[in-house]
Amino acid sequence: MWKKVLLSILVLVVLAVAGLAVFVVTYRPTQRPAPDLRVELTPERVERGHYLVETVLGCGDCHSQRDWSLYGGPVQGAALSGAGCMGPEAGAPGRICFPNLTPHPETGLGSWTDGEIVRAVREGIGRDGSGLFPMMPYSEYRHLSDEDALAVVAYLRSLPPAENSVPRSEIDFPASFFVKMAPRPLEGPVPAPSRADAAAYGDYLAHVSGCVFCHTPVDERMQPLPGRHMAGGHVHTGPWGTVVAPNLTPHATGLGGRTEEAFLGMFRAFAAEESRAIPARPGENTPMPWLNHSGMTDEDLSAIWAYLQTVPPVENRVERRPQVASAGEAAGRADPDT
Image 1 (cartoon, rainbow, N blue to C red):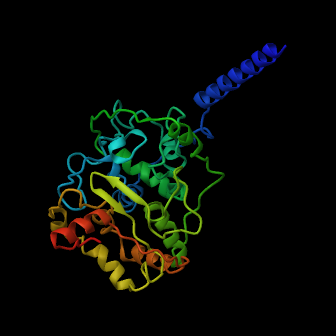
Image 2: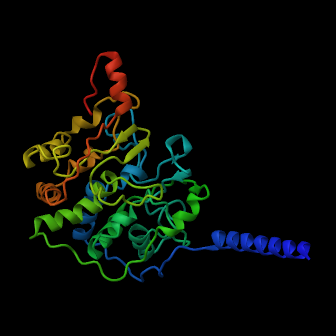
Image 3: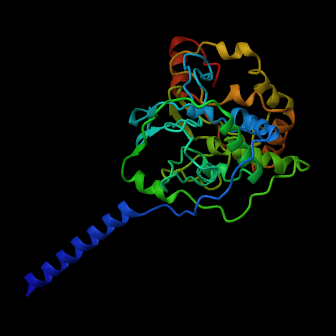
């Protein structure tokens, strides 16, 4: 009798495990059909898209080849034609690749519909219905207004097609399953923010430009830690080395001692063309998109500053390059970027 009971339990366990395995493999991210739309490539829309893609959103930071021997990693070659892949050596759970965003019909977005591009950017769903790895900041791009999303598509469509085939990302389990849980469909239209309210407009820009994404610490599932909004501590590892994002809250350990003029000045320091030719020591570069954001308008940067003043102050003193600082002390020098 006990043998039959044990056998029955074993069968149930096997069936449960098999059922769970099937669920994990076949589960698809929550999604909606791609919007049925066709973007008109007006000069105004393409110009706005150019500003967003190249300056605010920084799409080329991931989707272009970059020269990491120079500070800030300026783009080299055809912009937005795709980059390589990063793997476990950079802390990635598998191989994460950065595809070609030019309108090349075979290796880029040429065969995608406008609606599929908009859905991928704001909702994290690939053309085949798969979930995009959340290193692509669609959790922040979902704030992108409907009109700005169309402008992004218009600009990408205006690029010269570049042939460059990039491998698909391959995410290891269990991260591959959690990736499927990250995308969320938009629940309705996303209106453009009013520029009359500087702080509200800055909130919009801080999300879509990556400030929130990079400067808010996250857990192992890439979810922001409660009470740590913009407080720094998010570790970023890549071809630039390892950098810990600083605290941007108005606490004394963050931006509390800075003025708006000084804040804008940090960006303006990288506006000159010669800023793209500053040599960088190996492992002492930065993922901060100074080169892109230096082209943002004073109005936009001031709006971000106004928003940062409304963020609850959080005490968190961050050593941005602890390993470089230690090496610098040993060598009798200080790292200028810490």
